[in-house]
Every structure is written in C-alpha cells, then in structure tokens.
Length: 379
Image 1 (spheres, one colour):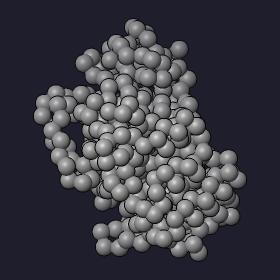
Image 2 (image 1 turned 180 degrees about the vertical axis):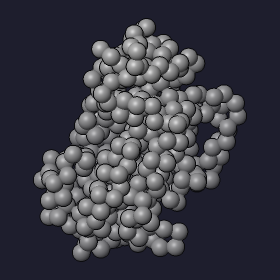
Image 3 (image 1 turned 90 degrees about the horizontal axis):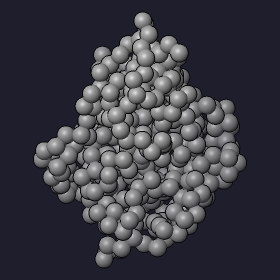
C-alpha cells in the first residue's frame, strides 16, 4: 500500500493495543494504513522523523463547549484543537434542539477538527452563561423539550452521540432530579447515553448516581465539596463503587469550578481513577484554571496517574463512552488521527478551581497533530 504520511521512530503509546514502544505509524486516505517497525515509504509519501517524540491516538476531549458565536461560553474549536493536540472535541450541551441546526451548519460542518455533540434536553442549550449573566437553563421546566430533543437527535445521528442535562443548585435551582428524569426519558427513547452535569446540591451526588444507567457519564466527577465524591476523611463514597460496578462512567470535566486537587488525591488514593479526562473548556476557563486538555492531563499525571492511564483516559476510554471504537486508536483501518506529545521535566505550577496550587515535576505539551490522515499542526 502507498502511504500518504509516515510518523517514523516515535515512542507510540496506544492503550487500545496495549502498546508502548518505538514504531512507525502510517496514514492513507484518511485512515491508519500501517503500524509497526520500518514501514516502507513510497515516492509520494511524506515522512516525518518523530525520534524522541510520543505519538498517541488523536486526543478526544469528551467535555468542551465549542459553539463559538452561538453561545456566550463557546470557544473556537480549531484554535483549541491545534494548541491542545485534540482531534475530536465533544461539545456537551451548548446547543439544544432549538438551536442545534445553527451549531451544525455554522460550526460543526465548517470546522476542520472533528466535533461531536451531546444534545441538551433544554430547548436553547446553555444560553445564560457568562461573566455577568448566570441563568440555569434547567431551572425552568418550560424549557425542557423532550419531544424536540428526540426529533433532533434522530435527524443528526452522525454527530449527536448522547443527551446532556445539567442539574445542581446553579444549573437547575430547586428542581432536584426532575430535569435528569426528563433527560433520561429522551436517552431511553433514542437509545443514546446520557451525560449528567452535577454542581452543588440539590440534588446530591448520590441521588444523581442512583439514576444513571450503564454507559451514562457523570461529568465533574472529581468536584470539590459540597457534592464531593469523597468523605471528609478522604474515603471514596460507596455509591461511586456501586455505580462503576454497574457501568456508569466517571469524567473529570475540569471547567471553571468542578475540579479539586484535594478530591483527586483522595480518589486516586482510593484506587478510583477517572474513566475519562476532559477539560470542560469554555470562555470562562480557557485562560485558567482549566486552560486546555493537555494541562488537565498534566495535572492527573502529576497527581500520580501513569502516562498510559492518562492517555487511555483521553483516547480509547473516551471512544468507549462515545460508542465509536474507530476513534481513540491507531489500529490499522481506524480514523487517521494522531497526536504528537512531549513530557517535559521541571517545576510547573498548576491550579485547581478552588485556588489550590500544585508544583508538578512534569508537563505534557502538544507538539503536533495528524487529522484525517494529514499533518495538520504545526503548519
């Protein structure tokens, strides 16, 4: 086979294949076309020497907000993906059934980077989220649009991967689990997984977990008190282990207010790693404390996760959550996406959403991106 591009001699970390070692990765026609040592180059093959670099499957950020211009919290997906090494941004509820057509036409279809979406059950998605305006879209039952959500999800199966709902004092006021119940009905009707946001009570962390099904995702899972997943003594609450045993997935979803070093230390000490690492990047956290996907990955690395586990939580595990197994892997025939990383040693300052600082010994940086089988960044 004639390869279009070969990344040669990198340390390839691909948890989907239990691989961590030196090899080449090749691409042709937008797909992975070769994986192994000394892949042959043809006369038209672009060969890039990756000696000393780390190549992984294209990073998936399972929680982003990239409806730029359509919502106040949206960022530019292509700019973010280039600098953070992300090849697939999963927008989590920026748009609801009332404005998803605009999101698809003006952003998803025009973006070079891949964008998938969880559709919000609220009619206009997250519409009141800025530095000066904070209106919880799940607080008003009149905005819940289950019929319309089913229709839009069915009509956009190629890019809609699940249903999103936000519950908690800030997102749903005194509505408790009522918006979650409606969203679960939509998820059942469409056969799609659900992603649930949780902030401060009501409802409680345990109440939300009790309602989630196998394959559903709880985001902001490593959040601070109140609604922390750990006790005051640092023990992981039993409800989490019970939920994981039945197949509920736990996502970081860092964002502006939803990740605490104290919680993360306790969770890792209790052997409870996140299933997925995501940034929840949006206009109010892209300049800190979340910044981007590789910064969020770096924090988990410095807290004690192995590089393999950090990469898995940003690639194959995210693909499992999306139920799209051609993502997050460098197996031959998979989507032609890859990320080039470096892990730098030194003293690096990190901050969580409660202002606690951590000086870490390592930082993961994005050095390049292969998108749809072509070298995409840096230019």
